[in-house]
Length: 125
Image (cartoon, helix red, strand yellow):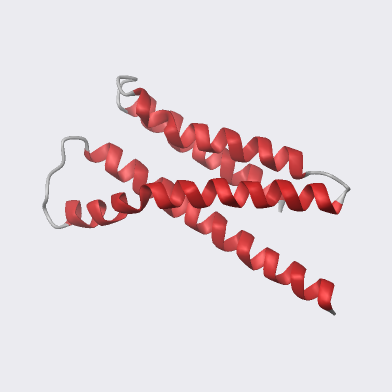
């Protein structure tokens, strides 16, 4: 799971830096996904441990960070749907970036929950 955490961290970094550059480096808030990505990548590196307790701790922290990222960007999903219906926003790229971050964080949380359930079942058997 630590490799998946690092991969999602890298994807969020690419999303943040890419949108920052695409908007002409005028809006530093477009780097917010990159900051979440840096945190996830660091947690992924920390989870690369032989000790199961440490690995479990870092992965639980990582999924909590991703869950917070998802919860904070849920409104952007609905705003993206409104954009597709013709509603205009002052910064549509920012809305789409937040929606992409929301999707990435949700996918990561889903993969982690599935992994946690499988690990729990393996321990019980």
